[in-house]
Image (tube, rainbow, N blue to C red; front, side, top):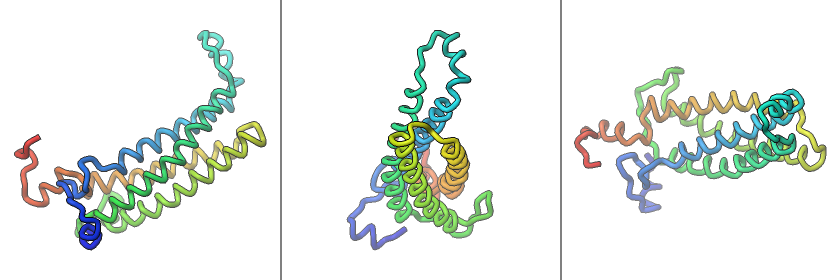
Length: 196
C-alpha cells in the first residue's frame, strides 16, 4: 500500500483498503464489458441480417438492419467513454493495493506480476477500444457498412477481454485485494462478528 499517497490525499481507508465501501473498478469493468459485448453482437446481427430476416418476419417482429448497427455503434461509443473511468479507478485502486508476498495464482504468477500485467493490459485495451470506436465511426459515417474485418477484430478482442478479466478476477478472488473479508482476516478480525 502506498502510504505516502494516503498521507498526501488524507484518505481514510475502510476495511477493504479503499476510501469508499464498494470498489469502483470492478463495477465499471462490468459496464465496459457489457457495452462492448452488446456492441459486437449487434453489429454481427446487423451483418447477418439477411439470414435472420425470415425469423423476424415469422415471429412478427419488425426489425430494421440499420437499428442493429445503431445499437452497436452507441454501445461501442459508451464503452469507449466508460473505459477511461474504468482504467482511472483501476490505477487508483492499484496504488492502494496491499498484495500478499508469498502467494501464487492458478497461472503461477505472484500478486505483483498479476497487478502489473492487469494494469498494462488495461491501458492496452483502452487504446484498442478507442481505436475500434474510431474505426467503427469511420465505417458508420463514411463507408455506410460494417466490415467483416472489424467484426473479426471485435471477436478477438472478446478473447483478450476474457484473459484480462481473469487476471483481474485473480487479484480479487485469489489474492484478496480490496476484498473486505480477506482484509479483515489478514488483520486477525472475524468478519462474521462485525456489525452489518
